[in-house]
Image (tube, rainbow, N blue to C red; front, top):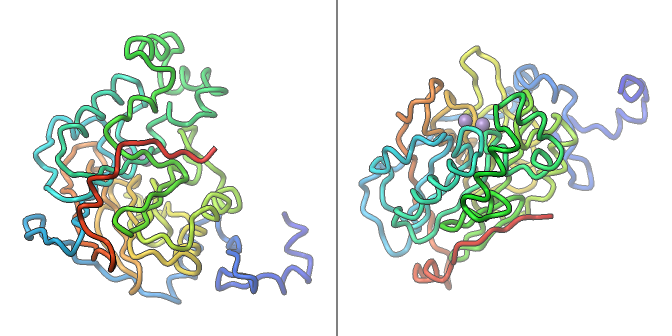
Length: 322
Ligand code: MN
Ligand code: MN
């Protein structure tokens, strides 16, 4: 790593705007220290407060009403009435505490009671058992860290008659590094975030994360990830920023979605904009895991040639990139 910085040829390859001449995203030199990276990056851009739509604004035929929630941690099931009506309900991960099958079943049942014709869900780091590697190779870890004993884990699967917790997600479109076209609007979802302790869907900052962001197609209109990008909804209670630098570069330089929805940093709840993309930290739970933050809603104009009735053709499914 050190050698790379000494190599003068490398300096020519580095473009501090975050993009190489071939259009690919470059890992930022301070990616592992996001707070420091942001002091530099923030000089070149604006972050303004965004205005969420009032949840009781009438729903119209020419626009999709999108309702965003996240980080409900098995609590939204007790307060389903806080979720306003809409066409699409999006959940940006951490619907459980440790991903046990009973938590997943309860969440899926809650989704079943929601009237939104399309529900889109991704997993977060707390939904441990959705991380295939964790289930295959990290069972000791599951037990040590989270008290999810192998026997308890298996027993619950048997109880609900499934091999894998993902099979319990029967009332939504579950996205894992995959996307779906909804009335001509492309929605893409990914559960990964920069490493935090030993939770699920963790990757090292920098190249490891960027490899996942490189999978996001350029026609994405609404991007859903569990973690925030650097600079938007990522300020932790202790003043540090937890967002991913390469996620912001990917959004601003390559994908340019209209909306980016995420959660993970509960205290970063709210809406911001960089002038093109609107960033929504939809964390429903507060820092203290109380489900006190209201769902955030917006309207997305239905592209020409599409009609709202197409929503009804979208069936629950699991779209998982292998
Ligand atoms: Mn959370
Ligand atoms: Mn999280």
